[in-house]
Image (cartoon, rainbow, N blue to C red; front, side, top):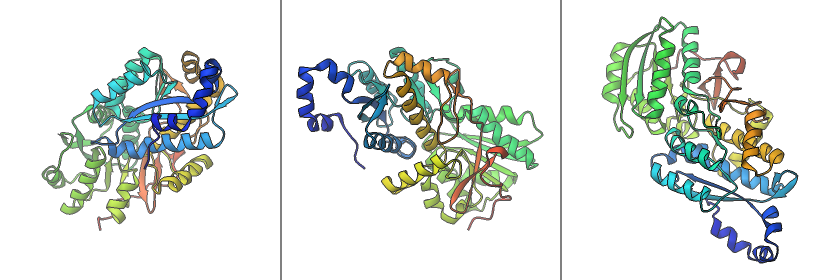
Length: 397
């Protein structure tokens, strides 16, 4: 995959820049819209970032430019993406956005990947006055900071864990076991599911945390297997999602409901686990059945990258780009006006209409999805389902 860079664009536009020296004010109004971001291309965050976010940035910019450019209050202008590798380092991420918004003064920014990076960047974007539409920030604490320029597209922990518990209650589940990573994402989701479970008669037979980067969870899984819970819940990042799935298969741990969170919706999960994905549930919110726009996006993504977008955050990332595009068409590049348009209006997206309340996506409820054959089907809540839940989970192969 190649990444557009500022230097490459400048070299290819020498003639235009020469003209701009004669009429700089005119060029500023008709030159490219500079959109900056930092994203993980290397390090532990890259597995998620290079599935759910940066490919969408590249595809969106390519499509918009091919259609004549970004509509800025009626004037079409080409997009120049200025993207950097944050190396999965919070400090590098922060320094890069300080440069983009401070000295580089880009027109717009796109968000980094993950709850931790967005937690670090959101106050900075708010200070500089840049709207930030985040598709991979799963943090109620971040929402509760009430930053006017921050907008969260992803369903928050209370919604996602609440939906999962509602589904388990409807299935008359009696016992569950939970493992969770010891970081912001894991801790917030763990707290959310505990709060939701307290309102039910479901018994939690085990709760175990683990550090980020864990290499072996087999001893924990063996202990849980001995307890024979109806449901297993893994609040996991992509590498850990694969780890708990592989090791559960290896030890023959096959509960009626097997849930693992981030990464379950990735094509990588299907590629690695193959037929063993059948019946696995996890965080997901859309697929090609969700809307005609969702199918068009899915097909275009596969055509460009020869890989599928994930069935959760990729859709939210694309929806965020659609919202930004519609808002710029109405408000232009005045960022204060842009923020007001985003905060006060509803937008048409591939996931359906989206509006924000106090920076939170108020339109899409918590959801649960399940691998059934070749697709990750939305199975809960029923009014958003693309297929019925299959239970119990088939045996590992």
